[in-house]
Image 1 (cartoon, rainbow, N blue to C red):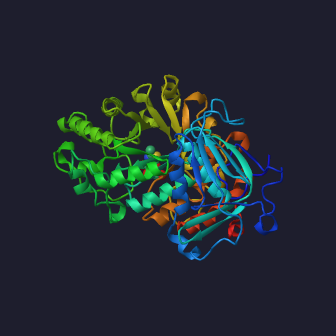
Image 2 (spheres, rainbow, N blue to C red; image 1 turned 30 degrees about the vertical axis):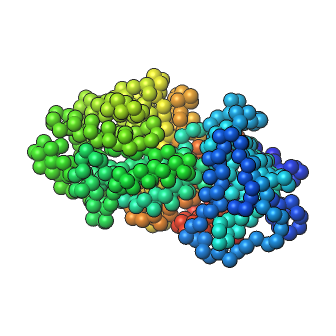
Image 3 (cartoon, rainbow, N blue to C red; image 1 turned 180 degrees about the horizontal axis):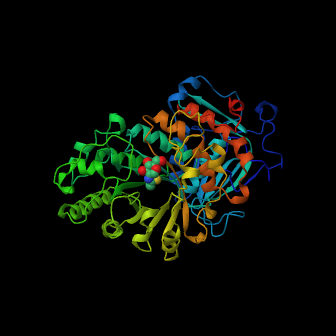
Length: 520
Ligand code: TNX
């Protein structure tokens, strides 16, 4: 097995050069004629059902982003004509792809005759094309931007690949500080390039309400404009939200909206006085404390609020999952908490959706179809293990590894420290199945990073904390354990930086990797 080229993250299952030569040599394309050129002039042949892949290829080649202007006059040297790209769906992929091939698996071959990509589904075609684009990056080929898009120059190679977990996500808090649609789309581009497939949006919290809910317009009218520190707020109208769902789908990403209940609700209490015992709206909250706000099960308005809001949100969700929060309710006894989260879960089920909740809800008996998200390993994991034993799925977000709002180190400008510092190597070097001892591995759906926005005021702030650590989490979620190696990851990850620069994304020169070697 050859080394995985610089800039290819997450590491694929298998990568071979046809002549058996190592992956990193002969980066200079002038010394042999063995390079294959892919551009928008490449003829594309699609097999039955594979048309979606052609659209993905066109979009990935077109991706003109802010930073691309600097490369506008770069044209490839004269060389081979654009090669054909052949896309096909098949259930039959060779080893080491597991049998039956999991969703998202693919087989990519680049030869003098062109590019052949076979995959089990459209997600697999996308993954193969993203790998092809990465292969045209730093270590193994070249990428040229010109007026009508990119040209990728790639050496012959064969890649067989499949994801380890089906749920490879990022949770993004847009409630403490709002992130406008364009910022979310930039994050979606970064997710697609790392083969991540879930964007969980934390849409409500004490400080703001970020999604228009048709049955309760006051939620955004009164609590959309507020944010931490009195910073500007904002919200997604139903129309903008539908646009976001579509942009996510174009990138192979499923949105999981979160309405955080029955705590973290001050924004709702500020908008709707009938949810408070006095009937008076709560004061807007712009601090960063947690755990103080709550719904009240005995108020008549509470049941109607849960039913109407969650039914509306379910109707705005294309995927199967809606997140109901359930975290950090410090001012309510267990029976009232359990009643409220069970009610919320039942409303979602009646609306045809599967409830997701933070680990605290494990003891509430959400049902065998629910999904629990683990984040705080200081708490007793017994209820999570028990819920999983009865059938619930588990998504792993251990704070000390994947809370990317934690500072990289003491010198980091942004971020919090309650779970310690999270250097790049720490976000990488952990084993998901060891996080909760005794948990049935078959119940682990995957891994989700989280970015809470108490300290982030802009897309620049968000990506400075995400990049490069999100690449580490992506490899944890995608790559087989025996394909993972911390030093090898640090060698490869630097090759992603030129792409982030081209996209105009701010990133952090995290300790441990040789970023200066990443200049194109
Ligand atoms: C814990 S994780 C929280 C959030 C905070 C975050 C800050 C979780 C379910 N709750 O409310 O924003 O820590 O790191």
